[in-house]
Length: 92
Image (cartoon, rainbow, N blue to C red; front, side, top):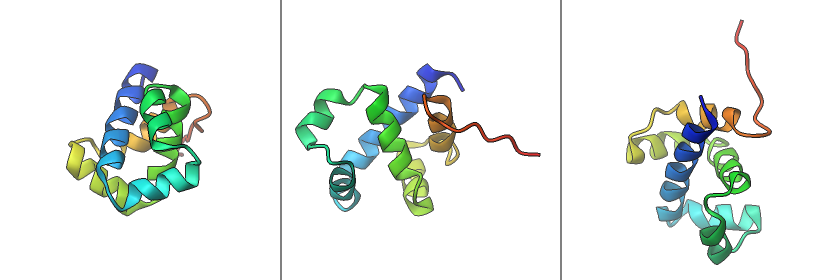
């Protein structure tokens, strides 16, 4: 996956996360970022990485995000791997 595609997926995941009244406050608390700062920095790769790292911690969140956004459930992890600091997993 190319970085540009990964960033677009990250933005979709962020949109879903921001719309979830239960999970969004957990993300804000865990990340230490204020909602207004998140809004200002939403397109930054560092923020998108944090969002993808957070959401991919829980399979139920990934599935809910995929259903809501229409992305493949594997796309959040693929996107994270394509962004800086993402681990490349090679299956044998």
